[in-house]
Image (cartoon, rainbow, N blue to C red; front, side, top):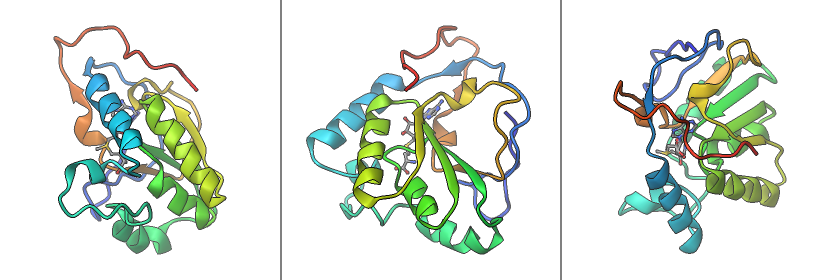
Length: 171
Ligand SMILES: C[S@@+](CC[C@H](N)C(=O)[O-])C[C@H]1O[C@@H](n2cnc3c(N)ncnc32)[C@H](O)[C@@H]1O
């Protein structure tokens, strides 16, 4: 997949997916899975609540909300949006509630289970799935907008990484 970063914000990418990914990726699957298990255990709603002192415990106060609010007027109406690394789905729910058609993916099944629950509770429709953004097939669905919500930072290429995929199941 190739993406074009906007000058607006380093944590967001806008463009059309075009090609496959060939580099070896070092996954932090166990660490990410443990984070979502803890989140569920402690009744929290999003990733940052695990790591920040000033946690809000408020699903709607997600970290890139102000950026998305700023970017909204620039997005095509009823755009097809992909969010990758969606975690528990706060940004995806925010976009879906504003009329965008949202596919939201995360590598960790526990995150997607929570995301589906939170979307259902809010009555918004998001097409959530467990997927590895690095393994999305070339030529798959095209999007008007692709949103990275702090996932890109955990995609690390490493020629010594194992060649096997992480132990996720598509759901
Ligand atoms: C820092 S967390 C941010 C989660 C969420 N966007 C938020 O702001 O609360 C990064 C997320 O990226 C996901 N992730 C990491 N590598 C991924 C990959 N290759 N494909 C899809 N998701 C991935 C992790 O499981 C994790 O949910």
